[in-house]
Amino acid sequence: METELIHRLQEQQRALRLAKQARRADGVPPGLVGLLAELDRLSGQECHVKELAAHTYLDPSTVSRAVAHLVTLGFVARTPDPEDRRASVLSVTPKGRAAIAEMHDWYGTVAAEALESWTPMELDDFTRMLARFSRDMTTYLSKEEAR
Image (cartoon, rainbow, N blue to C red):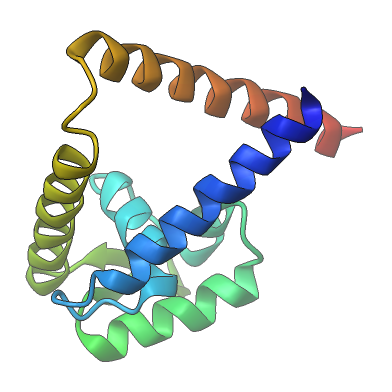
């Protein structure tokens, strides 16, 4: 069973990579989609590279380079932190929000078409189980990291 689960998770990762590569209209590089979406979810909070890295479980240097690219592309803005002039507060620009909206529309359309044979109950069950899986894995791995 464990081997089958691992195999299915690897298939799911491949499917998500394929989806990221197929979606090009909004101009967000495939490897930066998740970072931009997470920054948008954190909107309303002051967000620095360090916090964004913590929320995405990525190395701060990796996030810093990715954010610099998103800034260059116009999807993210940096403003000086009034409490620490050495730091910058990150925010999604209107162009970034438009790209995120386009991305959500595209993913919604693809998911609706790909899963059109699923019943509403199957979709609800899958959504609930996927949320539980993500929550349980995050909880477990966070405990492991703390050891």
